[in-house]
Amino acid sequence: MSLGSFLLRRLGSGALAILGVSILVFSFLHLVPGDPIDHLAGGEATADQRRLLEACMELDRPLPAQFLAFLGHIVDGSLGHQCPDPEKRPTVAARIAEVFPYTAALAVGGMLVAIVLALPLGVIAAIRRGTWLDTLATTTSLAGIAIPQMMFAPLLVFIFFVSLGWFPGPTETGARALVLPALAVGTHLMAMLARMTRGAMVEVLGEDYVRTARAKGLPEGKVLLVHALRNALLPVITIAGMQFGSLLSGAIIIEHVFARPGLGTTLLDAILERNYPVVQGSVLVIAAIYVGVNTLVDLAYGLADPRIRHA
Amino acid sequence: MKVALKLSPSAWVGAVMLGVFVVLGVIGPWVAPHDVGPRALDLAHRFEGASAAHWLGTDSKGLDTLSQLLWGARAALQVSFVVVAISATLGLTAGAVAGWYGGIVEEVLMRFVDILMSFPGILLNIAIVAVVANPGLPVMIAALCANGWVGYARVARGQVLALRERDYVAAAVALGAPSRRVIWRHLMPNLMGPALVQMSFGFGSVILVEAALTFLGLGPQVDHTWGAMLDQARTFLWKTDWVKLYTLVPGLAIMWVVLGANLLGDGLRDRLDPRQRGRS
Image (cartoon, rainbow over all chains, first blue to last red):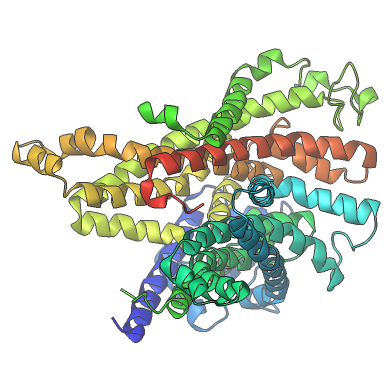
């Protein structure tokens, strides 16, 4: 199968999945008992205010019409309107665009921390397999996987902000304020990637082509980096990519601890205040990001290893 | 099972760690030194460090930390046990049915799996728990099962696709065994190995996600879950002397269970799923 038709098929099934998520969320929101107007308007709202809100959220129309309206908002790029605020009509897309840079910065920062730490750790553990270095690296990554972010992130804040004062704490923004959240996100990821790297390297180091490379007298560094690591990277790329996708959809616990704005927090807040347009819009964006990144990962897979045919 | 005896030492360590958790989860509330109910509030003894009366100190309401930890073990065990059991049953059945019947059944089920996988799991769990007003334990369990079964379904379908070509399955069909009998008597037993691996890992991830949800203030509002304890520690981060202990106690407890589940899962996978051998 050619790359083009592979892409088309992936995009098709991806779009189908995203549409499926939208329908699922839409029906779920409307099945659950509870009037969203009560939540948003509060107790003192007059009948007029309630009607305005209802009209803004398009709740006064039949369900199928509401869903069609939602699809229409996808097409016009607004993703719907935030309610209550019928006067200025700020779009859901605008609200998401406002928080997305924070989410993206955290995802990139966390990924950088993870990769910079994981690759050396995994490679060293694989080369020195069975020694105390290997044990140390393996134990570190196991601990990193098991450590709950709900404990690790507050501890980071406690040590580096409350006690030492080296880095800014929660609610602050800016480059330096990114350090602690990125560390918190990156450590967990680092642990997973280091494990994958070690496993893949151990396997690859036993391959014939590595022995050939050594036998023909290549310097060990070149053997390891060019012949071994490049081939070992495949599973690492997969996991890194999938994790990047979920980071881009909001690292909700870290956002919560550091009181950072982000996609995950936006979705959580919207759910809690029953703001249906925002819930539907952010769910759609998150699903699109997630599916998009996973498709890119599959493509990268083929680029990294030409032996893989997209079937 | 004979294989159980041949597990690696680290898998045994994991099994023992999980075992300790299960035992404490069952007997915890009975051996807890103090009451953790509303009547036990003791505002004169808030934010205390370790002492003879309170081995692990007290919290912001003067409740005994060790007792909260033990009650939390019960809560965590309940949720994870029920969620893993329901998810595994649902997932294995769905996967086996999809793999065996193929066609439209398989297409529909696997599309549904695709949809659930095109969205980060924890956000789905959060959405379900957050939308329901005053969610109780059943809502939490339902939320965790909503996407928990997907992993089992994928494993089961893959296995069944391979198994259905085997001679003994063909023989059973030729002898006139109905599909239901083939699935339950001939396919299911052979799915148990991979399912066990998945269940072990699932145990760890359910504990983590459940704690994350209660940490975010979602789900049943009781104080003595590990997630709620961590949330309380976060709220009083400025109580510098106290917060270290109170963060570490539930945090390390969660880590203990997740570590145990992962060690056991790794060991079982090496034993039962030869395709994966050497990957980790």
